[in-house]
Image 1 (cartoon, rainbow, N blue to C red):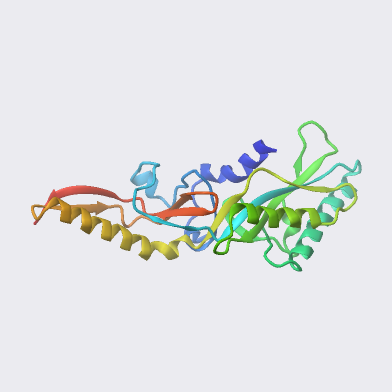
Image 2: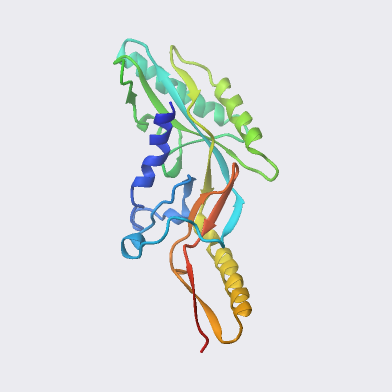
Length: 245
Protein backbone atom coordinates (compact mmCIF):
# COMPACT_ATOMS: atom_id res chain seq x y z
CA UNK A 1 0.00 0.00 0.00
CA UNK A 2 2.69 2.51 0.94
CA UNK A 3 4.57 1.91 -2.30
CA UNK A 4 1.39 2.64 -4.25
CA UNK A 5 0.78 5.81 -2.24
CA UNK A 6 4.33 6.98 -2.91
CA UNK A 7 3.80 6.50 -6.62
CA UNK A 8 0.40 8.20 -6.49
CA UNK A 9 1.62 11.36 -4.74
CA UNK A 10 5.24 11.65 -5.79
CA UNK A 11 5.20 10.77 -9.47
CA UNK A 12 4.25 14.36 -10.14
CA UNK A 13 7.42 15.58 -8.47
CA UNK A 14 9.36 13.96 -11.30
CA UNK A 15 7.41 15.83 -13.96
CA UNK A 16 7.69 19.47 -15.02
CA UNK A 17 4.70 21.70 -14.49
CA UNK A 18 2.28 21.88 -17.41
CA UNK A 19 2.66 24.81 -19.79
CA UNK A 20 0.86 27.96 -18.68
CA UNK A 21 -1.35 27.79 -21.75
CA UNK A 22 -2.61 24.38 -20.67
CA UNK A 23 -3.24 25.16 -17.01
CA UNK A 24 -2.26 27.86 -14.56
CA UNK A 25 -0.63 25.84 -11.80
CA UNK A 26 -0.45 28.72 -9.36
CA UNK A 27 -4.22 29.25 -9.46
CA UNK A 28 -5.12 25.57 -9.06
CA UNK A 29 -5.49 23.37 -6.01
CA UNK A 30 -2.13 21.68 -5.47
CA UNK A 31 -1.11 18.61 -3.50
CA UNK A 32 1.68 19.64 -1.11
CA UNK A 33 4.47 17.15 -0.51
CA UNK A 34 7.88 17.48 1.11
CA UNK A 35 9.50 17.53 -2.33
CA UNK A 36 9.99 20.71 -4.29
CA UNK A 37 8.12 20.80 -7.62
CA UNK A 38 9.78 22.61 -10.57
CA UNK A 39 7.67 25.40 -12.06
CA UNK A 40 7.60 26.63 -15.64
CA UNK A 41 11.04 26.75 -17.30
CA UNK A 42 12.82 28.63 -14.51
CA UNK A 43 14.82 25.68 -13.21
CA UNK A 44 16.23 24.76 -16.62
CA UNK A 45 17.57 28.31 -16.93
CA UNK A 46 18.44 29.25 -13.36
CA UNK A 47 18.92 26.24 -11.07
CA UNK A 48 18.38 26.92 -7.37
CA UNK A 49 18.89 25.08 -4.13
CA UNK A 50 16.09 22.72 -3.19
CA UNK A 51 16.01 24.11 0.37
CA UNK A 52 13.35 26.81 0.85
CA UNK A 53 14.59 30.28 1.86
CA UNK A 54 14.29 31.49 5.43
CA UNK A 55 11.57 34.05 4.69
CA UNK A 56 8.20 32.86 3.47
CA UNK A 57 4.59 32.48 4.53
CA UNK A 58 3.50 29.63 6.79
CA UNK A 59 -0.24 29.04 6.95
CA UNK A 60 -2.80 26.32 7.58
CA UNK A 61 -3.41 24.28 4.42
CA UNK A 62 -6.80 24.53 2.77
CA UNK A 63 -7.51 20.78 2.88
CA UNK A 64 -6.38 17.62 4.58
CA UNK A 65 -6.22 14.96 1.88
CA UNK A 66 -6.33 11.18 2.14
CA UNK A 67 -5.71 8.73 -0.69
CA UNK A 68 -8.27 5.91 -0.68
CA UNK A 69 -8.38 2.78 -2.79
CA UNK A 70 -11.34 0.63 -3.78
CA UNK A 71 -10.30 -2.98 -4.42
CA UNK A 72 -12.41 -5.62 -6.12
CA UNK A 73 -11.72 -9.35 -6.53
CA UNK A 74 -14.86 -10.67 -8.18
CA UNK A 75 -13.72 -13.25 -10.75
CA UNK A 76 -15.74 -11.93 -13.69
CA UNK A 77 -13.97 -8.83 -15.04
CA UNK A 78 -17.02 -6.82 -16.08
CA UNK A 79 -18.85 -7.53 -12.84
CA UNK A 80 -15.71 -6.72 -10.84
CA UNK A 81 -15.34 -3.34 -12.53
CA UNK A 82 -19.04 -2.59 -12.16
CA UNK A 83 -18.72 -3.25 -8.42
CA UNK A 84 -15.61 -1.06 -8.09
CA UNK A 85 -17.12 1.86 -9.96
CA UNK A 86 -20.45 1.28 -8.26
CA UNK A 87 -18.74 1.86 -4.92
CA UNK A 88 -17.03 4.99 -6.27
CA UNK A 89 -20.47 6.24 -7.26
CA UNK A 90 -21.81 5.49 -3.77
CA UNK A 91 -18.91 7.47 -2.30
CA UNK A 92 -19.68 10.47 -4.51
CA UNK A 93 -23.36 10.36 -3.59
CA UNK A 94 -22.58 10.07 0.12
CA UNK A 95 -20.07 12.94 0.01
CA UNK A 96 -22.81 15.16 -1.39
CA UNK A 97 -24.93 14.44 1.68
CA UNK A 98 -22.24 14.79 4.34
CA UNK A 99 -20.89 18.19 5.27
CA UNK A 100 -17.16 18.75 5.21
CA UNK A 101 -16.19 15.95 2.80
CA UNK A 102 -15.17 16.36 -0.84
CA UNK A 103 -13.84 13.85 -3.35
CA UNK A 104 -11.16 14.60 -5.89
CA UNK A 105 -8.66 13.13 -8.29
CA UNK A 106 -5.18 14.10 -9.41
CA UNK A 107 -1.59 13.43 -8.45
CA UNK A 108 -0.46 17.05 -8.43
CA UNK A 109 -3.24 19.36 -9.57
CA UNK A 110 -6.46 18.44 -7.77
CA UNK A 111 -9.77 18.31 -9.60
CA UNK A 112 -13.23 17.36 -8.30
CA UNK A 113 -14.35 13.75 -8.67
CA UNK A 114 -17.95 13.81 -9.88
CA UNK A 115 -20.64 11.59 -11.35
CA UNK A 116 -19.63 12.98 -14.73
CA UNK A 117 -15.99 11.89 -14.62
CA UNK A 118 -15.57 9.04 -12.12
CA UNK A 119 -15.49 6.41 -14.86
CA UNK A 120 -12.25 8.02 -16.05
CA UNK A 121 -10.39 6.79 -12.96
CA UNK A 122 -7.49 4.54 -13.94
CA UNK A 123 -7.92 0.85 -13.16
CA UNK A 124 -4.81 -0.74 -11.68
CA UNK A 125 -4.18 -4.48 -11.80
CA UNK A 126 -2.72 -6.49 -8.96
CA UNK A 127 0.82 -7.71 -9.60
CA UNK A 128 0.10 -11.18 -8.24
CA UNK A 129 -3.53 -11.87 -9.17
CA UNK A 130 -5.21 -11.17 -12.49
CA UNK A 131 -8.67 -11.15 -10.90
CA UNK A 132 -7.91 -8.24 -8.53
CA UNK A 133 -8.22 -4.61 -9.65
CA UNK A 134 -8.43 -1.27 -7.91
CA UNK A 135 -8.92 2.45 -8.37
CA UNK A 136 -7.59 5.26 -6.19
CA UNK A 137 -8.82 8.78 -5.54
CA UNK A 138 -8.75 11.49 -2.87
CA UNK A 139 -11.01 12.21 0.09
CA UNK A 140 -10.63 15.78 1.38
CA UNK A 141 -11.85 17.81 4.31
CA UNK A 142 -11.37 21.53 4.70
CA UNK A 143 -9.03 22.56 7.49
CA UNK A 144 -10.75 25.23 9.53
CA UNK A 145 -9.14 27.29 12.27
CA UNK A 146 -8.34 25.11 15.27
CA UNK A 147 -8.82 21.77 13.48
CA UNK A 148 -5.87 19.48 14.03
CA UNK A 149 -4.72 16.56 11.92
CA UNK A 150 -6.34 14.04 14.26
CA UNK A 151 -9.78 15.63 13.89
CA UNK A 152 -9.41 15.83 10.11
CA UNK A 153 -8.38 12.19 9.89
CA UNK A 154 -11.26 11.09 12.11
CA UNK A 155 -13.73 12.88 9.83
CA UNK A 156 -12.27 11.19 6.76
CA UNK A 157 -12.16 7.76 8.43
CA UNK A 158 -15.80 8.07 9.45
CA UNK A 159 -16.71 8.81 5.84
CA UNK A 160 -14.69 5.86 4.49
CA UNK A 161 -16.42 3.50 6.89
CA UNK A 162 -19.85 4.88 5.94
CA UNK A 163 -19.56 4.26 2.19
CA UNK A 164 -21.74 1.23 1.36
CA UNK A 165 -19.91 -1.75 -0.13
CA UNK A 166 -20.96 -2.94 -3.57
CA UNK A 167 -20.54 -6.67 -4.15
CA UNK A 168 -17.03 -7.70 -3.17
CA UNK A 169 -15.55 -4.22 -3.61
CA UNK A 170 -13.95 -2.71 -0.51
CA UNK A 171 -12.63 0.77 0.27
CA UNK A 172 -9.56 1.40 2.40
CA UNK A 173 -7.25 4.26 3.30
CA UNK A 174 -3.95 4.21 1.48
CA UNK A 175 -1.00 5.75 3.34
CA UNK A 176 -0.86 8.88 5.46
CA UNK A 177 -2.75 12.13 5.46
CA UNK A 178 -1.38 14.84 3.19
CA UNK A 179 -2.36 18.45 2.41
CA UNK A 180 -3.47 20.69 -0.43
CA UNK A 181 -3.43 24.45 -0.97
CA UNK A 182 -5.69 26.39 -3.33
CA UNK A 183 -4.20 29.07 -5.58
CA UNK A 184 -0.72 29.48 -4.09
CA UNK A 185 -0.02 32.45 -6.38
CA UNK A 186 -2.61 34.52 -4.51
CA UNK A 187 -0.11 34.79 -1.62
CA UNK A 188 2.69 36.23 -3.74
CA UNK A 189 2.21 39.85 -2.60
CA UNK A 190 2.19 38.84 1.07
CA UNK A 191 5.37 36.78 0.59
CA UNK A 192 7.17 39.64 -1.18
CA UNK A 193 6.16 42.00 1.64
CA UNK A 194 7.81 39.66 4.13
CA UNK A 195 10.97 39.41 2.02
CA UNK A 196 11.13 43.20 1.58
CA UNK A 197 10.74 43.78 5.31
CA UNK A 198 13.53 41.31 6.05
CA UNK A 199 15.79 42.93 3.42
CA UNK A 200 15.23 46.37 4.92
CA UNK A 201 16.04 45.08 8.40
CA UNK A 202 19.20 43.35 7.16
CA UNK A 203 20.32 46.46 5.29
CA UNK A 204 19.79 48.61 8.37
CA UNK A 205 22.03 46.32 10.43
CA UNK A 206 24.84 46.53 7.89
CA UNK A 207 25.02 50.29 8.02
CA UNK A 208 24.83 52.96 5.31
CA UNK A 209 27.88 51.72 3.38
CA UNK A 210 26.16 48.49 2.31
CA UNK A 211 22.83 47.36 0.90
CA UNK A 212 21.11 44.03 0.42
CA UNK A 213 20.07 42.94 -3.07
CA UNK A 214 17.46 40.22 -3.48
CA UNK A 215 17.57 38.08 -6.63
CA UNK A 216 14.91 35.68 -7.88
CA UNK A 217 11.88 37.69 -6.82
CA UNK A 218 10.46 37.26 -10.32
CA UNK A 219 10.18 33.50 -9.81
CA UNK A 220 6.81 31.81 -9.22
CA UNK A 221 5.52 30.95 -5.77
CA UNK A 222 6.53 27.49 -4.57
CA UNK A 223 5.44 25.40 -1.61
CA UNK A 224 6.36 22.63 0.79
CA UNK A 225 4.81 21.02 3.83
CA UNK A 226 5.64 22.72 7.13
CA UNK A 227 3.77 20.57 9.68
CA UNK A 228 0.88 18.13 9.98
CA UNK A 229 -1.59 20.83 8.92
CA UNK A 230 0.55 23.74 7.64
CA UNK A 231 2.21 24.61 4.36
CA UNK A 232 5.15 26.92 3.69
CA UNK A 233 4.78 29.21 0.67
CA UNK A 234 7.81 31.04 -0.66
CA UNK A 235 9.52 32.68 -3.61
CA UNK A 236 12.98 31.11 -4.06
CA UNK A 237 15.00 34.30 -3.75
CA UNK A 238 18.60 34.81 -2.63
CA UNK A 239 20.32 37.75 -0.87
CA UNK A 240 23.65 39.36 -1.68
CA UNK A 241 25.44 42.25 0.05
CA UNK A 242 26.50 45.08 -2.28
CA UNK A 243 28.03 48.56 -1.74
CA UNK A 244 25.38 51.20 -1.31
CA UNK A 245 25.07 53.64 -4.17
